[in-house]
Length: 177
Image (cartoon, rainbow, N blue to C red; front, top):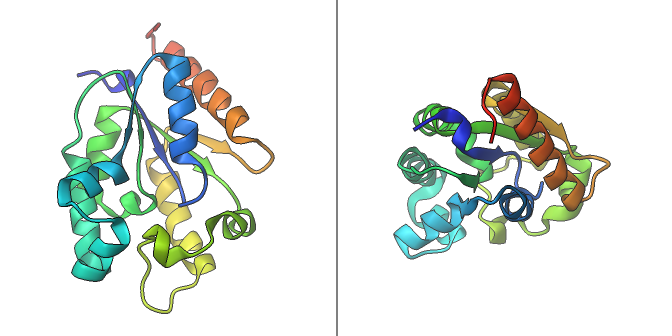
């Protein structure tokens, strides 16, 4: 399996990975996979139920294991926001495809997110969204092949940017799709 065959979307919850992923997959003629849905399907529970049942650390282990087991070609994969904590998963995803970090400021995320518990956001007890954001941004940037600033873009514009930059990245690496 060749790295350039897949596109992996990472970033904070609420940035639009799933929506952007569906649109980008249609434009690129790929399958779309939402790793959060794979987790829910595998364990038969919603994300927030898994966090309640296993605790944040237990959930992160589940997320790491599921993401490290994803395989296939010609896919756009939207990951959960906390995938960046799973070293095994992130190394696997880096081998599986081009990692694209969708970046959005903390204020814009706070407006989009709503109830963090209901969304199944893996956060330490008492941790604020701003603290979580600062902690994760460093990890997203560490693993990303491409960073897209989504601040002034609609979800459709972001999807178009993903397609454009992934195509350019592939071309620079000598692959034409």
